[in-house]
Amino acid sequence: MDKKFQAAYVPIGVGTFHMPSAQAMFDASAKLLKDICEDTAVPDEMLLNTDLLNAFLDTVDPDLIILQNLTFANAAYASEVLHRFKDVPILLWTLREPVIDGGRLRLNALTGAFSAANTIRQFRDRPFEYVYGAPDEEKVKDTLTKMIKAARVRQEMQSLKVCAIGHTPQGFGFGRALDNDLLSVFGVRQDAIEARELIDTAKGFSEADIKEYLNDAMNRTVGFDETPEKNRMDFARLYKAYAEFVRKNNIGAVASRCWPDFFVSFGTPVCAVLAMLNDLGVAAACEADMYGALSMWMGMKLSGRSVFFGDPVSLDEKENTITFWHCGTAACSLARKDTGACIGEHCNRHIGPTMEFGCAESEHATIFRIGRNPDGTFRFFITAGKTLDRPKQFFGTSVVIETKDCSAKIIHEAVKAGWEPHYAVIFEDVADELEMLAHMFGCEVTRY
Image 1 (cartoon, one colour):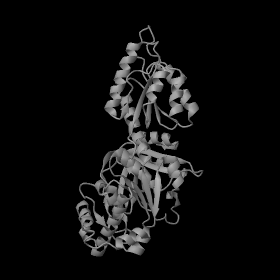
Image 2 (image 1 turned 30 degrees about the vertical axis):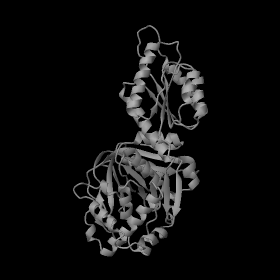
Image 3 (image 1 turned 90 degrees about the vertical axis):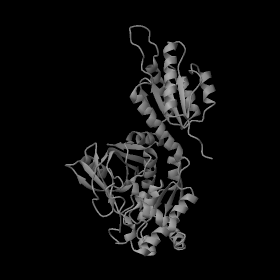
Image 4 (image 1 turned 90 degrees about the horizontal axis):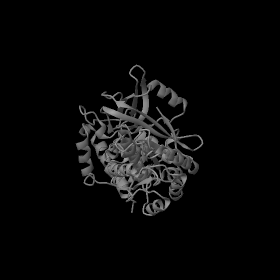
C-alpha cells in the first residue's frame, strides 16, 4: 500500500529567550501549516531541548521536514534531524525578529538559522530551500505552499511506474532511459513492452469491443467522423489496447514509439491515442521519449491538468515568442475553445486520425525538460511565460509562448548548451516548484 504523504513541522529553540513571543509564533506557524496541508505533523509543544525533539521525531515518517528556528538553537538540533532523515527534503524557516525597540533580543532566530544551515551543508551536498519571515507574511505562505506541493510530487514519484512502449527511433536516443537511472535518481520504476505487442492486441478487438472508445473519441473531438472508417475503427482498437494496458499495469506515464511502425505495420497512427491518454491523466510522449514523458507527468501533477509535448520550431524575436509544435498528440482539453479538438491526418504520412489545433491561451505557463548531461547526471530546463491566443501554426498541434526572459537568448543558450529537442509546456507557473524538485533530486538547474 502506498505511503500517505506527511510533512513534519519541527520548531526548535531554547527556553532562555522570550517565551511569550516564541509561543505566539509557534501557534501561528502550526495553524498556517495545517491550513496549507492537513497532513502536517505538528508537535504538542515547542521543541526547546533535544529530548523533546527526539521524542517528536520518534512519531513521524516525513516526506518533508519544515525546520523552523523559533529561537536560537545550536547545531545539535539540526544534527539530530539530519541523522535520522538523511534523504528527506528540508525547508529551513527563520522567523523574523518580532520587535526591535532597543531592548531584549526576543528570539535570535536568524543566528540559529546560520547554525542549522551550516549543519545541513555538512550533511548534504545538494541545495535546500529557505524562507525568512513571520507566519502572516505572504511570501512565507507562498514558499511553504510550493514546497509542500513539490514534496508531494516527489513522494508520488516513489510509487510511479512508467512504461517504454517500443524503442526510440534511430537518432532519438536522447529520450532513452535506463531503468536504474530512473529508479536511483527519481525513485521511478520502468516497465517495457514492444509496440507490436499492443498492435497485435488491438487487432484482436471486435467492433463491439471498441464501441465505448469510439464514442469517447467522438465526444472529445471535432471532425472525427470525417476520418476514413477503417482508420476510425483501428484507432479505437489501439485506444482500447493502450488504455487497458495502462490501467491493468498501473502505469502513470508512457513513452511510445510512433513512426514508422504504426503507419507501416498497423496502417493507423498512434498520435490521437496518446492525446486521449493525456486527457485521461496519463502522461504520454511520442517518439519513445521517456524523459519527455516524465517531464509531462511532473507538469501534470503540479498543474492539475494536461500538458503539451512538442518541439521548439519557431522563434519570433520581435514578439518575444517561441512556438512549440508536434504532429498531433496534444490533449483535447488543451484546444482553443473556438475550434475544439479538431481531427486531421498526419502531416507527412497523410494518414489519420491525428489532432489538429492550436492550444488555448493561458496567463501562466512553464516550459520544462528533464535533460541528461554527457556524464550521466541530470539537469532541469525551466522557463516561464504565457501562452498566446493563436490559431494552429502548422499541420498538427501547436502553442505559442511569450517568455518572461528574452526568447532569443533562451533559444541561443539552449542550443549552445546542447539541450534536447522535446519539451513539456505546462499551463501554469510552476517554475519554483520544479526548481525545488531539482534540488530534491540533486539535479542541475538551468532557469530563465
